[in-house]
Image 1 (tube, rainbow, N blue to C red):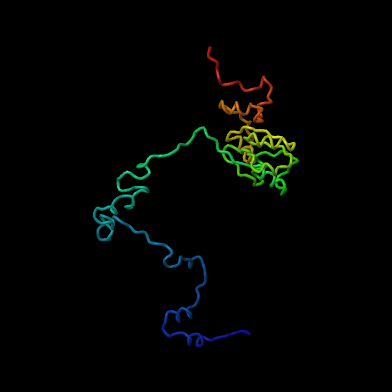
Image 2: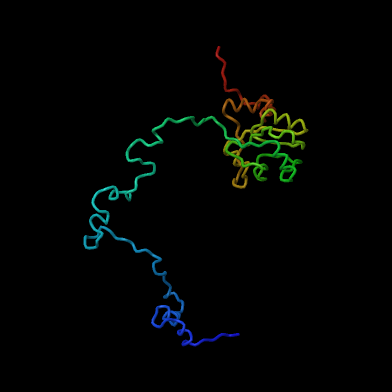
Length: 245
């Protein structure tokens, strides 16, 4: 059913002389480039200060005489400013320190590794590197790689070929007890990024060797399943220690 109404019917329901009444009867303006404009109040007018006393915002620019709010920087002190007294961040002694030689590894336990294999998110028939662990969502690899621990060792039953940054002695024994294989490989920051995101490199960088003495010794030890333990003698990294006669 088509409803039609006259102007008289429309205005009969509105109070005569009101703004709403006139807005109802006002003809709509055709939209064109010359009629486009912001809504009233959409743009705030810029307050021009320092242009003479007759403007009302001259000389002191509306800030008044002296005081904290008259100073530069909008009158707001910096964060953690306590009026000039020694702030709490400096008043009390600190505990601990940041170890510049420390490593930040992502911990992976054996039970979670087996869970991801059971769900089909990791293929145990192929070599599992830190890229597969990161892409599958098993772990989120941090700055220095992945460290394998023996948590939930009783749940591990699938032999895997695993490559991580570090592994505990119990985890190595558990992997090899079910017929698997594990290798610990060193990656610097650039090498780890190239392993996780090779698509970001036009040419993949050469894998860097460890430079610190403790890293060289750790990855050269067959007990830790380090990848440098099986290098030929002529390719082995020379020791950084020197004997004193």
